[in-house]
Amino acid sequence: MTDTSDPTDWTDTETFQTALQRAETIEKGTYFEGFTEGDTIAHAAGRRLTRAGNERWMGQTLNHDPAYWHSDAADALDYEEPPIHPDYLLAAVMGPTVEDLSEKGGYFLGRTDLRYHTDAVYPGTELGVESTVLDRTTSSSRPAYGIVTWETTGYEARTDEPLLSYRRTNMVPRRDPVETDGGESGMQAETESGPSALPAELIAPEGPYFEDFRAALGEVAGRDAAVAYRHERGRTQDDLLIAGLPLATLNTAKQHHNAAAMADSPSGEPVTYGDVTRSIALAHARSDERTYRELRYEDEAFHDFVTAGDTIYGFTRVLEATATPTVDLPAGTDSDGAGQVTFEHFAFNQHDEPVYSGRRTALIETRTHQ
Image (cartoon, rainbow, N blue to C red; front, side):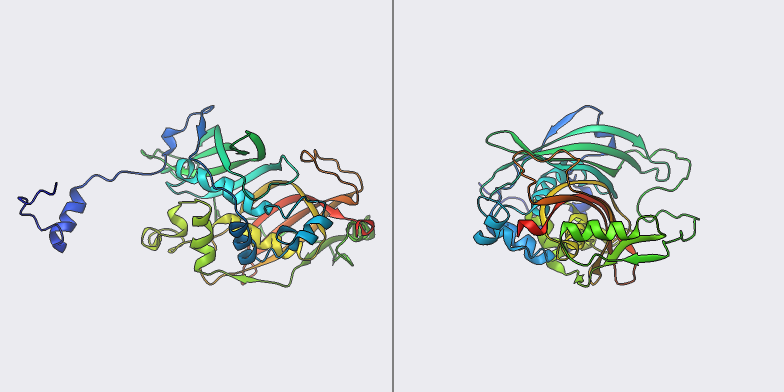
């Protein structure tokens, strides 16, 4: 029942501002001190993966692969039906972890050992997600932050079947700052090293198949040359990419949708979710290859902020191509008609500055699989 005896006009601006100054804020997220090595965190229930959500992610990040929405194309790649795109699956697994792990803010320093545990995930899957604290250390450069590494697993909630896992590292705010040695760490850390020497020649493969990547590597073997090339497409960052896609994956980090909170941050405004930047760069690369299956990712890092109006392009270096897979394949994966290729991918902005890098291993179709 409403208390009509209270004479306070809570809608008076000055009165309300005074109330805000006096009121306690019920906080979200976890400070650095709240993490203990070995603890396992069961996150809130994840998304039910839908075809609509999958296609929205793919369309906005330029991952225009019909195998993930068209039955005939899916059948040609030996899927039962169009599956969930691996980039959307990753974002949907990471999203529910943000409130518990990184909503307090802090740089996303990197991710590694990203592995897919099953050949395909289909619409209707309900996600469960949990993370284990692997390590927590003091930041050498920022007294207000510590560094935490977690291992996260996304699984099918009804069967507990693991779908993917990865390790990621973030700077996390401390409740109580400590003294540090003043060293550099994190995004935009300064270095005094100059440009490194590039190979004398960079060549591109002549086609999108496994044989083309292997032939290009053979051409540069023993020479001062590398298989490295840029992709033509670019994608300019807009509100849907910066706020819409992360919120659709339950990523509640204020860095992507709260302009007021970000006004005094190093970027000065909301920034693009790292996995959106990554997915755009990978989309550019995949458009120039015949991808059969994604296998794993290592040493993913984010090198600078991406904000509204920035345009993201892609650059790829081919590291290795083997006819027989050398990494563990996801359960149920048949590698017939495909060879294993390891790439190093880069996202860069309109100023030709790298903003993401990572090593990716994938199965690429052979011409005999057509």
